[in-house]
Length: 375
Image (cartoon, rainbow, N blue to C red; front, side):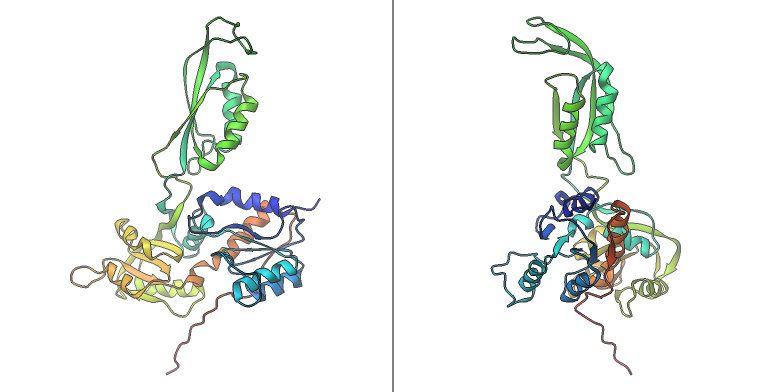
Protein backbone atom coordinates (compact mmCIF):
# COMPACT_ATOMS: atom_id res chain seq x y z
CA UNK A 1 0.00 0.00 0.00
CA UNK A 2 1.45 3.37 -1.07
CA UNK A 3 2.11 6.08 1.50
CA UNK A 4 0.39 9.45 1.04
CA UNK A 5 1.87 12.93 1.44
CA UNK A 6 -0.29 13.30 4.55
CA UNK A 7 1.45 10.33 6.17
CA UNK A 8 4.90 11.67 5.31
CA UNK A 9 3.90 15.08 6.69
CA UNK A 10 2.59 13.48 9.90
CA UNK A 11 5.92 11.69 10.39
CA UNK A 12 7.92 14.88 9.90
CA UNK A 13 5.63 16.98 12.10
CA UNK A 14 5.77 14.46 14.93
CA UNK A 15 9.50 15.22 14.95
CA UNK A 16 9.31 18.94 14.12
CA UNK A 17 5.77 20.21 14.87
CA UNK A 18 4.56 23.13 12.79
CA UNK A 19 3.42 24.74 16.05
CA UNK A 20 7.03 25.46 17.07
CA UNK A 21 7.89 27.31 13.86
CA UNK A 22 8.60 31.00 14.33
CA UNK A 23 5.66 33.35 13.76
CA UNK A 24 7.20 34.87 10.62
CA UNK A 25 7.72 31.50 8.95
CA UNK A 26 5.70 29.53 6.39
CA UNK A 27 6.08 25.77 6.82
CA UNK A 28 4.21 22.64 5.82
CA UNK A 29 2.79 21.62 2.44
CA UNK A 30 3.31 24.52 0.04
CA UNK A 31 2.13 22.92 -3.21
CA UNK A 32 0.17 19.70 -3.67
CA UNK A 33 -2.62 17.57 -2.25
CA UNK A 34 -2.31 15.77 1.09
CA UNK A 35 -3.99 12.58 -0.16
CA UNK A 36 -1.64 12.13 -3.13
CA UNK A 37 0.27 8.81 -3.02
CA UNK A 38 4.05 9.31 -2.80
CA UNK A 39 6.13 7.70 -5.55
CA UNK A 40 9.36 9.03 -4.06
CA UNK A 41 10.84 11.91 -2.06
CA UNK A 42 13.70 14.22 -3.02
CA UNK A 43 15.31 16.20 -0.17
CA UNK A 44 17.15 19.50 -0.70
CA UNK A 45 18.01 22.60 1.29
CA UNK A 46 16.27 24.89 -1.23
CA UNK A 47 13.85 24.55 -4.11
CA UNK A 48 15.48 25.30 -7.48
CA UNK A 49 14.86 24.38 -11.10
CA UNK A 50 17.73 21.88 -10.88
CA UNK A 51 15.99 20.22 -7.94
CA UNK A 52 12.71 20.03 -9.86
CA UNK A 53 14.53 18.51 -12.85
CA UNK A 54 16.13 15.95 -10.55
CA UNK A 55 12.81 15.02 -8.93
CA UNK A 56 11.32 14.32 -12.36
CA UNK A 57 14.42 12.33 -13.30
CA UNK A 58 14.36 10.02 -10.24
CA UNK A 59 10.55 9.64 -10.24
CA UNK A 60 9.91 11.51 -6.99
CA UNK A 61 6.63 13.43 -6.78
CA UNK A 62 7.34 15.06 -3.38
CA UNK A 63 10.18 17.51 -2.75
CA UNK A 64 11.04 18.23 0.89
CA UNK A 65 13.19 21.28 1.57
CA UNK A 66 14.39 23.10 4.64
CA UNK A 67 13.81 26.57 3.23
CA UNK A 68 10.28 27.35 2.07
CA UNK A 69 9.91 28.57 -1.49
CA UNK A 70 6.80 30.59 -0.67
CA UNK A 71 8.08 32.55 2.31
CA UNK A 72 6.17 35.79 1.73
CA UNK A 73 2.75 36.08 0.07
CA UNK A 74 2.86 35.94 -3.73
CA UNK A 75 0.42 38.01 -5.78
CA UNK A 76 0.66 36.21 -9.12
CA UNK A 77 1.35 32.60 -10.06
CA UNK A 78 3.26 33.22 -13.28
CA UNK A 79 6.71 32.56 -14.69
CA UNK A 80 7.59 36.24 -14.63
CA UNK A 81 9.69 35.94 -11.46
CA UNK A 82 11.63 33.20 -9.71
CA UNK A 83 9.57 32.15 -6.69
CA UNK A 84 6.12 32.13 -8.35
CA UNK A 85 7.69 30.48 -11.40
CA UNK A 86 8.95 27.58 -9.29
CA UNK A 87 5.53 27.14 -7.67
CA UNK A 88 3.84 27.23 -11.09
CA UNK A 89 6.24 24.64 -12.48
CA UNK A 90 5.59 22.35 -9.50
CA UNK A 91 1.85 22.51 -10.09
CA UNK A 92 2.20 21.95 -13.84
CA UNK A 93 4.51 18.98 -13.24
CA UNK A 94 2.21 17.51 -10.55
CA UNK A 95 4.99 17.73 -7.98
CA UNK A 96 4.31 18.49 -4.32
CA UNK A 97 6.56 20.64 -2.15
CA UNK A 98 6.81 20.44 1.63
CA UNK A 99 9.01 22.72 3.78
CA UNK A 100 10.12 22.27 7.39
CA UNK A 101 12.10 25.35 8.31
CA UNK A 102 12.19 26.97 11.75
CA UNK A 103 10.16 24.09 13.19
CA UNK A 104 13.17 21.88 12.35
CA UNK A 105 15.51 24.57 13.69
CA UNK A 106 13.56 24.39 16.97
CA UNK A 107 13.45 20.59 17.22
CA UNK A 108 15.68 18.53 19.47
CA UNK A 109 18.15 16.72 17.19
CA UNK A 110 17.23 19.23 14.49
CA UNK A 111 19.45 21.53 12.42
CA UNK A 112 21.72 22.99 15.11
CA UNK A 113 22.10 19.65 16.89
CA UNK A 114 23.16 18.06 13.58
CA UNK A 115 25.65 20.89 13.01
CA UNK A 116 27.02 20.45 16.54
CA UNK A 117 27.47 16.72 15.97
CA UNK A 118 29.23 17.30 12.66
CA UNK A 119 31.66 19.69 14.37
CA UNK A 120 32.52 17.22 17.13
CA UNK A 121 30.58 18.68 20.06
CA UNK A 122 29.48 16.52 22.98
CA UNK A 123 26.89 16.93 25.76
CA UNK A 124 24.86 19.11 23.40
CA UNK A 125 21.94 21.17 24.75
CA UNK A 126 19.75 23.96 23.40
CA UNK A 127 21.32 27.40 23.40
CA UNK A 128 17.88 29.02 23.78
CA UNK A 129 15.00 26.89 25.07
CA UNK A 130 11.60 27.75 23.61
CA UNK A 131 9.08 29.48 25.87
CA UNK A 132 5.26 29.34 25.85
CA UNK A 133 5.14 25.73 24.69
CA UNK A 134 4.05 23.78 27.74
CA UNK A 135 0.81 23.36 29.69
CA UNK A 136 0.08 21.41 32.87
CA UNK A 137 -2.80 18.95 32.59
CA UNK A 138 -4.51 17.63 35.73
CA UNK A 139 -7.10 14.84 35.56
CA UNK A 140 -8.98 12.95 38.28
CA UNK A 141 -9.47 9.18 37.89
CA UNK A 142 -10.91 6.39 40.09
CA UNK A 143 -8.06 4.40 41.59
CA UNK A 144 -8.64 1.19 39.62
CA UNK A 145 -8.37 3.03 36.29
CA UNK A 146 -5.50 5.40 37.07
CA UNK A 147 -2.77 3.36 35.37
CA UNK A 148 -4.73 2.75 32.16
CA UNK A 149 -5.63 6.45 31.86
CA UNK A 150 -2.05 7.54 32.54
CA UNK A 151 -0.75 5.15 29.87
CA UNK A 152 -3.34 6.46 27.40
CA UNK A 153 -2.19 10.02 28.10
CA UNK A 154 1.44 9.03 27.57
CA UNK A 155 0.62 7.24 24.30
CA UNK A 156 -0.95 10.48 23.04
CA UNK A 157 2.22 12.42 23.82
CA UNK A 158 1.70 13.75 27.34
CA UNK A 159 4.61 13.79 29.78
CA UNK A 160 7.56 14.33 27.43
CA UNK A 161 10.52 15.78 29.35
CA UNK A 162 13.89 15.77 27.57
CA UNK A 163 14.86 12.16 26.86
CA UNK A 164 12.02 10.75 29.00
CA UNK A 165 8.37 10.08 28.20
CA UNK A 166 5.31 9.09 30.25
CA UNK A 167 6.42 11.52 33.00
CA UNK A 168 3.61 12.21 35.49
CA UNK A 169 2.87 12.70 39.17
CA UNK A 170 -0.06 11.19 41.07
CA UNK A 171 -1.60 11.79 44.47
CA UNK A 172 -4.56 10.26 46.28
CA UNK A 173 -7.72 12.08 47.26
CA UNK A 174 -11.49 11.90 47.34
CA UNK A 175 -13.77 12.99 44.52
CA UNK A 176 -17.31 14.18 45.35
CA UNK A 177 -20.24 14.33 42.93
CA UNK A 178 -24.01 13.91 42.84
CA UNK A 179 -25.53 12.35 39.69
CA UNK A 180 -28.47 14.30 38.31
CA UNK A 181 -31.58 12.92 36.60
CA UNK A 182 -30.11 12.49 33.08
CA UNK A 183 -26.76 11.12 34.28
CA UNK A 184 -25.52 7.59 33.67
CA UNK A 185 -22.95 7.34 36.45
CA UNK A 186 -20.17 4.75 36.49
CA UNK A 187 -20.51 4.76 40.29
CA UNK A 188 -22.97 6.51 42.58
CA UNK A 189 -26.74 6.89 42.72
CA UNK A 190 -28.99 9.55 41.21
CA UNK A 191 -29.69 12.41 43.63
CA UNK A 192 -27.20 11.25 46.28
CA UNK A 193 -23.81 12.77 47.04
CA UNK A 194 -21.12 10.21 46.32
CA UNK A 195 -17.53 10.09 47.61
CA UNK A 196 -15.06 8.13 45.44
CA UNK A 197 -11.37 7.39 46.15
CA UNK A 198 -9.58 8.95 43.18
CA UNK A 199 -6.10 9.61 41.87
CA UNK A 200 -5.03 13.05 40.71
CA UNK A 201 -2.68 12.67 37.73
CA UNK A 202 -0.74 15.69 36.54
CA UNK A 203 1.77 16.02 33.74
CA UNK A 204 3.07 18.53 31.24
CA UNK A 205 1.69 18.59 27.70
CA UNK A 206 2.88 20.53 24.67
CA UNK A 207 0.07 22.80 23.51
CA UNK A 208 -0.45 21.18 20.12
CA UNK A 209 -0.78 17.72 21.70
CA UNK A 210 -3.47 18.73 24.20
CA UNK A 211 -6.47 17.95 21.98
CA UNK A 212 -5.19 14.44 21.24
CA UNK A 213 -4.37 13.80 24.89
CA UNK A 214 -7.86 14.87 26.00
CA UNK A 215 -9.37 12.55 23.39
CA UNK A 216 -7.22 9.68 24.73
CA UNK A 217 -8.39 10.44 28.28
CA UNK A 218 -12.05 10.42 27.23
CA UNK A 219 -11.54 7.02 25.56
CA UNK A 220 -9.81 5.42 28.57
CA UNK A 221 -11.66 7.09 31.46
CA UNK A 222 -14.68 5.24 32.94
CA UNK A 223 -16.66 8.41 33.81
CA UNK A 224 -19.05 9.96 31.31
CA UNK A 225 -17.95 13.40 32.54
CA UNK A 226 -14.20 13.73 33.04
CA UNK A 227 -12.93 16.34 35.50
CA UNK A 228 -9.70 17.96 34.37
CA UNK A 229 -7.85 21.28 34.50
CA UNK A 230 -5.29 22.89 32.19
CA UNK A 231 -2.78 25.48 33.43
CA UNK A 232 0.02 27.36 31.68
CA UNK A 233 3.48 26.04 32.54
CA UNK A 234 5.75 29.02 33.11
CA UNK A 235 8.97 27.24 32.22
CA UNK A 236 10.96 26.68 29.02
CA UNK A 237 10.68 23.45 27.03
CA UNK A 238 13.47 20.90 27.17
CA UNK A 239 12.42 19.51 23.80
CA UNK A 240 12.31 22.63 21.62
CA UNK A 241 14.59 25.62 21.20
CA UNK A 242 17.06 27.37 18.91
CA UNK A 243 20.78 26.92 18.58
CA UNK A 244 22.92 24.41 20.44
CA UNK A 245 25.87 24.43 22.81
CA UNK A 246 28.31 21.69 23.72
CA UNK A 247 31.96 20.90 24.35
CA UNK A 248 34.89 19.55 22.38
CA UNK A 249 36.57 16.48 23.76
CA UNK A 250 39.78 18.48 24.29
CA UNK A 251 40.71 22.15 24.30
CA UNK A 252 42.12 23.28 20.93
CA UNK A 253 43.39 26.59 19.57
CA UNK A 254 40.99 28.62 17.44
CA UNK A 255 42.88 28.34 14.16
CA UNK A 256 43.36 24.58 14.53
CA UNK A 257 39.64 24.19 15.13
CA UNK A 258 38.87 26.42 12.15
CA UNK A 259 40.81 23.95 9.98
CA UNK A 260 38.53 21.17 11.24
CA UNK A 261 35.44 23.32 10.62
CA UNK A 262 36.51 24.06 7.04
CA UNK A 263 37.09 20.38 6.35
CA UNK A 264 33.80 19.19 7.83
CA UNK A 265 31.64 21.96 6.38
CA UNK A 266 33.39 21.64 3.00
CA UNK A 267 34.28 25.30 2.79
CA UNK A 268 37.51 27.14 1.98
CA UNK A 269 36.86 30.38 3.87
CA UNK A 270 35.39 31.53 7.19
CA UNK A 271 34.99 35.08 8.50
CA UNK A 272 36.42 35.09 12.03
CA UNK A 273 36.73 37.35 15.05
CA UNK A 274 39.36 36.04 17.44
CA UNK A 275 43.08 35.41 17.83
CA UNK A 276 44.69 32.31 16.35
CA UNK A 277 45.81 30.95 19.73
CA UNK A 278 42.55 31.49 21.64
CA UNK A 279 41.71 28.27 23.56
CA UNK A 280 38.44 26.70 22.41
CA UNK A 281 36.53 24.13 24.46
CA UNK A 282 32.89 25.22 24.82
CA UNK A 283 31.22 25.97 21.48
CA UNK A 284 27.79 27.35 20.58
CA UNK A 285 26.28 26.95 17.11
CA UNK A 286 23.18 28.06 15.23
CA UNK A 287 22.46 26.92 11.70
CA UNK A 288 21.45 29.68 9.27
CA UNK A 289 21.20 33.28 10.46
CA UNK A 290 22.04 33.34 14.16
CA UNK A 291 23.27 36.86 14.81
CA UNK A 292 20.60 37.48 17.43
CA UNK A 293 22.12 34.83 19.72
CA UNK A 294 25.61 36.32 20.07
CA UNK A 295 24.87 37.80 23.50
CA UNK A 296 23.28 34.55 24.69
CA UNK A 297 26.31 32.56 23.54
CA UNK A 298 28.52 34.90 25.58
CA UNK A 299 26.30 34.57 28.66
CA UNK A 300 26.53 30.80 28.24
CA UNK A 301 30.34 31.08 28.54
CA UNK A 302 30.98 29.81 25.01
CA UNK A 303 34.57 30.18 23.80
CA UNK A 304 33.37 30.27 20.19
CA UNK A 305 30.04 30.91 18.48
CA UNK A 306 29.50 29.52 14.96
CA UNK A 307 26.67 30.68 12.70
CA UNK A 308 26.04 32.43 9.36
CA UNK A 309 24.88 35.71 7.83
CA UNK A 310 26.56 38.00 10.38
CA UNK A 311 26.44 41.68 9.53
CA UNK A 312 29.59 43.75 10.00
CA UNK A 313 28.62 45.55 13.20
CA UNK A 314 27.59 42.36 14.99
CA UNK A 315 31.27 41.40 15.06
CA UNK A 316 31.95 44.22 17.54
CA UNK A 317 29.57 42.69 20.10
CA UNK A 318 32.17 40.15 21.23
CA UNK A 319 34.86 42.76 21.96
CA UNK A 320 35.65 44.05 25.45
CA UNK A 321 36.31 47.69 26.33
CA UNK A 322 39.89 47.34 25.07
CA UNK A 323 38.85 45.84 21.74
CA UNK A 324 39.90 42.29 22.59
CA UNK A 325 37.47 39.43 21.85
CA UNK A 326 35.79 37.94 24.92
CA UNK A 327 34.51 35.14 22.69
CA UNK A 328 35.55 34.04 19.21
CA UNK A 329 33.00 34.42 16.43
CA UNK A 330 32.88 32.45 13.16
CA UNK A 331 30.61 33.22 10.21
CA UNK A 332 30.75 30.04 8.14
CA UNK A 333 27.95 31.02 5.75
CA UNK A 334 24.24 30.23 5.68
CA UNK A 335 24.35 27.31 3.26
CA UNK A 336 27.52 25.91 4.79
CA UNK A 337 25.94 25.82 8.26
CA UNK A 338 22.77 24.09 7.03
CA UNK A 339 23.54 21.67 4.20
CA UNK A 340 23.77 18.95 6.86
CA UNK A 341 19.98 19.33 7.04
CA UNK A 342 19.67 17.34 3.81
CA UNK A 343 21.37 14.31 5.39
CA UNK A 344 19.36 14.80 8.57
CA UNK A 345 15.97 14.77 6.80
CA UNK A 346 16.89 11.87 4.51
CA UNK A 347 17.94 9.73 7.49
CA UNK A 348 14.81 10.62 9.44
CA UNK A 349 12.47 9.89 6.51
CA UNK A 350 14.10 6.52 5.84
CA UNK A 351 13.65 5.62 9.51
CA UNK A 352 10.05 6.88 9.68
CA UNK A 353 8.84 5.72 6.27
CA UNK A 354 11.04 2.75 5.19
CA UNK A 355 8.70 1.88 2.29
CA UNK A 356 9.27 5.25 0.56
CA UNK A 357 12.14 5.86 -1.86
CA UNK A 358 14.06 8.83 -0.45
CA UNK A 359 16.78 10.66 -2.40
CA UNK A 360 19.14 13.44 -1.41
CA UNK A 361 19.75 16.01 -4.12
CA UNK A 362 23.08 15.86 -5.89
CA UNK A 363 22.96 19.62 -6.52
CA UNK A 364 24.28 22.41 -4.35
CA UNK A 365 21.40 24.87 -4.07
CA UNK A 366 23.66 27.67 -2.84
CA UNK A 367 23.23 30.64 -5.22
CA UNK A 368 26.59 32.10 -4.14
CA UNK A 369 30.17 30.91 -4.54
CA UNK A 370 33.47 31.82 -2.93
CA UNK A 371 35.95 33.69 -5.08
CA UNK A 372 39.45 33.34 -3.65
CA UNK A 373 42.09 35.47 -5.32
CA UNK A 374 45.08 33.59 -6.67
CA UNK A 375 48.24 35.50 -5.80
